[in-house]
Image (cartoon, rainbow, N blue to C red):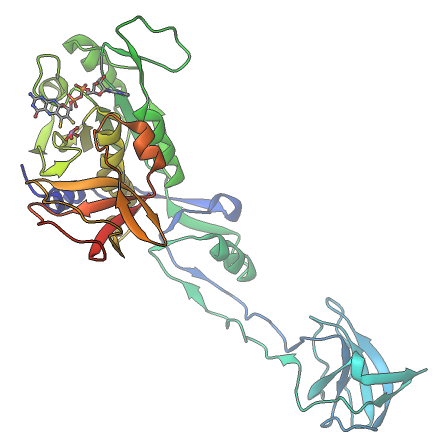
Length: 389
Ligand SMILES: Nc1nc2c(c(=O)[nH]1)N[C@H]1C(S)=C(S)[C@@H](COP(=O)(O)OP(=O)(O)OC[C@H]3O[C@@H](n4cnc5c(N)ncnc54)[C@H](O)[C@@H]3O)O[C@H]1N2
Ligand code: MOO
């Protein structure tokens, strides 16, 4: 059994980023930017009014009377110049006319025909947004950057219509076991419903991958070989179940006959001990344990980091946070324990039931509380690490 950190490092070692594609902005959300995107123009491209009012050429004084000589609206510049003694009616977002040094709010103005008088409230403020105040021409978004929702608006403002991003990695998901049916089928009395694969597929898709759920592989060599063969072409192969030492746990054996180069098998982690990793068909492969909670926890700790590394994320590791225990916890065993736990204002409370078959407990959990190997008893209030779910 190797430590979790070493297992993760070895998984990440197996991975090279996928190639890129150029997509329109509407398809770029959540994707990894792989080449720099550059603004060809400043924003705003001109000095713009930040208020509705009057553009003036001298510092505004209460009681001052000015002649209105024209109008500037957003998208409709005033093409003349404003001189002392004059004002240009202006609206928010309009280019500030040449000669103007400030915009007086319309609330501070009394207008009669084409003349305005400035009121007592006029203040010493310009209400002008300088050209390039947000960004200048040549401003870039640099790779490697995960494009968040606001980045799409920023790219649009930069007049970048297409970006070069990582292709969506495809992940082949294979559930194994004679006991499994798909949801909605009528089970025999000795069968159960394949469940964890649905969580894994959703996690992969939420992280920007494409999940290919392959047919359930039955517990015999031919069936498993046939389904593994269908995984060819994926960027990552993930099997679920059949990872342990039982007579029907065939994944490592069959994958071995198909060219699997194993990196490791078994890690000091609970749940998730029988995790396996290697390369098959020229791509990384993860063999997850079948217990539903084990598979999903391994999904968070290994499948998602692998997926992020495939997209080119330079820091694909899970991000642990720190919190305080709400209750006392006992001595931990030899494996790192990722305990299903709640997190609220009072701190982190691991649930009493930690069996790796209990999906209802995982579904109630906010976090996985990390208990390091051989960690001694800890009292309520101690600092602990957790992974948010
Ligand atoms: N003698 C030993 N037995 C076991 C050991 C061990 O070290 N020595 N390790 C235990 C641990 S820890 C785990 S974890 C499991 C892992 O077993 P497998 O990966 O071989 O998984 P299966 O035996 O195929 O299934 C385990 C369990 O999970 C159910 N299952 C499987 N696939 C799914 C699925 N897609 N959806 C829902 N449920 C699934 C399956 O029916 C079993 O109940 O091994 C222990 N045994
Ligand atoms: O390591 Mo197993 O995943 O605890 O149930």
